[in-house]
Length: 244
Image 1: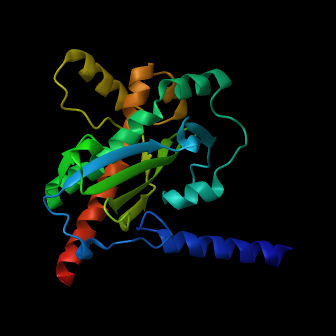
Image 2 (image 1 turned 120 degrees about the vertical axis):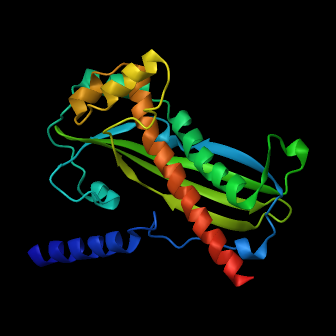
């Protein structure tokens, strides 16, 4: 039995290593070289998976690697760090639809920046391409001394005329909640929020924030996922240009 468990762990970590740096252990589609997307119209659709409709809270052992995949492997349901009421306060404060929008915005920004696509709001505008972004899961990983938000998202670009899949990507970053990403806010209220957020290191501190502050710090993880997705698109675009 001992050797069986050891073998199982070795297999698990081989998958973890294979997935490092790519956002997913699965192969992706990149056919950008086969389609002329540059300057074309594109409609953007955002979805929140049923599993991501509510923020999930899990305890974890803080004395381990920061690799996002490892979090999933050793997440624990042992002694609870947050009380039931604190967990409820956090989950009630977080709109995962808002997080979906932030992920989608990161990808949309990259498409506009690097491929000069023209966003259209409706299919009545006859877009040439469709981009779909789905928030697949959202977890708050808590310990006494630190809090991470793990966002898993999937996106794809589709040729509307043929329905063919052109490009896809998975991203699943685990982002430590340490400071706000909006430290340049100009109004006094926002500055007050930023000063509070900058002090966050543990679950108890997170639970002490008001609902809007909780949403703000959790949104940072979604922004990071969107940024990573946009950066993957940029790299794939460079590869596609080299093939032409």
